[in-house]
Image 1 (cartoon, rainbow, N blue to C red):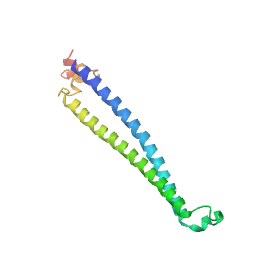
Image 2: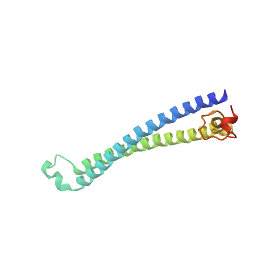
Image 3: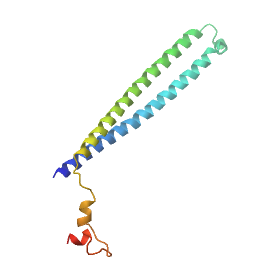
Image 4: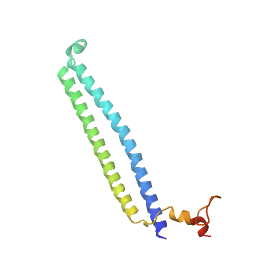
Length: 138
């Protein structure tokens, strides 16, 4: 039966989409963590702008070198965040393809109403008139 094949294809598409949704959730959590890390790095950079915090260290710590390291760390976090966003974009593209595949599967389904078969072979109420489709199918 063609409808069985369609059902199998819909199930495969559903499983594939479900996997992509799980991947999106993982990527979103990772991106949130990375964004939080970027916020922390920015806050830390603001603290390092105040050179009075370096006084206890004397000449052993170069404030500009510390700020440069903090900027490098921030750039690394932004790079990882860009990677996360690219991965998320790939999931969005996969979801778009799945939507197109689903539309293609729907286009191949029979045009008759899904309820039509139920009306002719489904259960009948006790108040059915003799001319109803329920009795006419007996």
